[in-house]
Amino acid sequence: MLLEAVLTGAVAGGTSILYPTVGETISERAGIVNLGTEGSMLAGAMTAYAVGIETGNAWLGVLAGAAAGAALAAVLAFVVLVRGANQIASGLVVTFLGIGLTSLFGQDYVGQGVNPLETVPVPGLSRLPFVGPVLFDHDLLTYLSVVVAVGIWLAMFRTRTGLWLRAAGERPEVLQTFGTSPRRVRAAALLVGGALAGVGGAQLATAYTRNWSENMTVGRGFVAVALVIFAAWNPLKAIAGAYLFSGAIALQLELQARGTDLSPYLLQALPYLVVVIVLAALSRRRVHAVPESLSRVFESAG
Image (tube, rainbow, N blue to C red; front, top):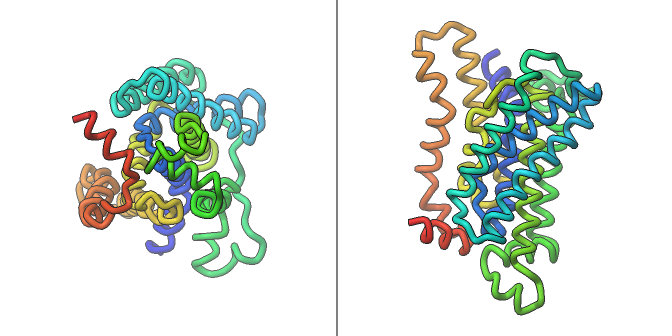
């Protein structure tokens, strides 16, 4: 059934996009645009795959992937927050750094098998018609991604830490008045965001595709940055954005597998067209939600 296959693919594949989208939401709420998300995803994917192979433990790989993603984000934090470099240019450089490093250190792992994160069906629920395969027959990181998104939303809007985070992106001078360093808050946000991007890359390599190849994220990190706008900087809405993009990927794969007459090049472009169309349709409605500090980023880049 086409619909069931597409929705199942949306949930399974959307996990690798949801983690970096939530991570980027944290960074942008603090006033930092992290275009290095793609690099952190690649670092997480390659590191998780390599560590999983060397240790035989996929979960150690996931932890290593999170650390690798955070390490690249730390480079951006140093360059932007300590040295005062432009966020947009620095983020792109970090992504290129990630591409180069993962291509160099990951070449020996291309084609090697890894102990993957196994699918864990939810007892009883996974056997339900239609709903079971779509929602309850995935790896643990997929289930955990929704928990993380909800937890980050609660922390962002219901805790003092979340208030500091949002203040760093809206009124950093207020934080200074109360003795809290906006730079430290932003650095912490970048590190958490980078770690989540690394987890997304780890899930992509060790659970979804179960392989490693150069530049295997094919722009998912940049899509995550775009989906933050779709989600209006809200981690809960990021769930819908991630599944929408991944659903478009699943649809084009299913159509190709079923021998559609549509051009394969058009089908490959379909997920990105969906993102552009949705962003164009919702952009005006999202203007009011932009953290104030982000506008200064683009003004300084102009």
